[in-house]
Amino acid sequence: MVKIFGRKNSVNVQKVMWCAAELGLDVTRVDVGGAFGGNDTDEFRAMNPNGSIPVMMDGDLVLWESNAIVRYLCDQYGKGPWKLSSGHGAALAGQWMDWYLTSMHPPMTTLFWQLIRTDTNARNDAQIQTAIAGSGRLWAMLDQHLTTRDYILGDSPSMADIPLGCSAYRWHRMEFERPDLPNLKAWWDRLADRRTYRDNVMIPLT
Ligand SMILES: N[C@@H](CCC(=O)N[C@@H](CS)C(=O)NCC(=O)O)C(=O)O
Image (cartoon, rainbow, N blue to C red; front, top):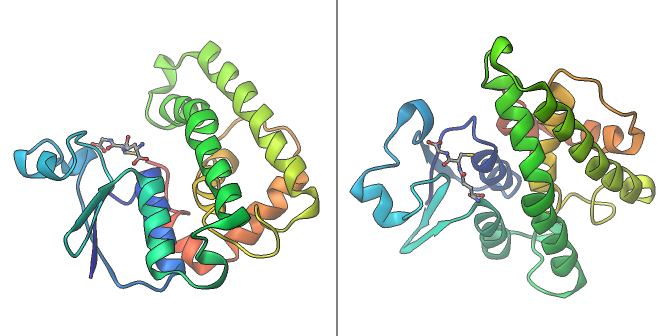
């Protein structure tokens, strides 16, 4: 039985829970982090010295870093396009997943904290505008990539769609003026047709 430690409103926990749902895994999730606390105890830090969520436990394997957990679950339990252990698919999935983490996550985190977690009168408009412009340039690159594909690797969803897919919900749901990116929107609509995505990702932004 796979156990996940982490609150469900965390984008990093959502990646793992959505992935597990796609694979049809029976997962137990324990609320940890944020208002629930529990991630600064000796016991939790023995699992993850960063004190961050998510953490996954599968038998005697304890794993942190959400993208690493997604890759592990797909490799261990995935079938078809969800299992990409090697070859071009795995390489390209790694590229998009790393790109999310290193390029897209920073401006999207700024937007989330400014627009969702900061009172209106305490917001920093310059930071918000810079983050909209910065993430908008990156979403435009993905929009271009999606001109000829339904999903990031082609005809089927795969682990490559997971980190960016979780972030795309926030991009489309937070309130600001977005550039018109029709291929990105069509891809996001396709994700939103999936019950697994709606149940685990499309939940209130808090
Ligand atoms: N790179 C890590 C980042 C983990 C991370 O920063 N998690 C946040 C939640 S999204 C966290 O633990 N915040 C502290 C808390 O929730 O108490 C990953 O992808 O798993």
